[in-house]
Length: 172
Image (cartoon, rainbow, N blue to C red; front, side, top):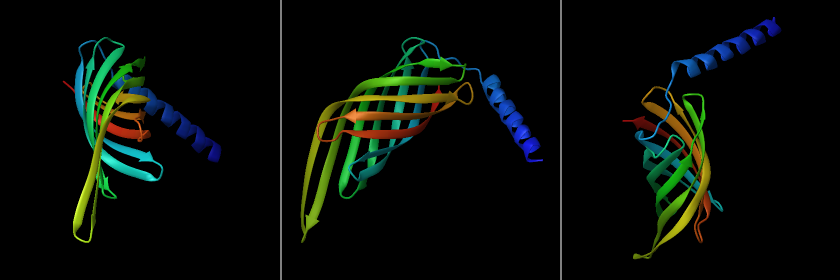
């Protein structure tokens, strides 16, 4: 009985995956543009914070895409953070709806630490340039709507850290 249920489950999963790939045909081509939002999570040495961001994607060719983006990280432990990025993706098309990509780019990061002690407030802020290296994947659910996941490592003096993001984009 368990063997029949397992085989039935495997067949159902195969049919579901095949249907997803068959129903969603959407190759990315030169000139395609998309914009979207993402949720981010950055962490380093015990300090982690969540962020919300926006991105714009433009396909320079069928294989190369640029993606400027900006993320504001929610205040935590008296620290405000933000970043602005300009990344290049090299797209590996796996089927018509799924793309994986390595990424490389530049980042501009800012943070501000605020503190108050006995009614006296003080803050220190700093901005720095750095580099991004990482990888991501994007799956087009329809011809105009896709989901993506990305992991990048920001190389910034005094603030190297990985950033994980999950987002959605609309093609226009």
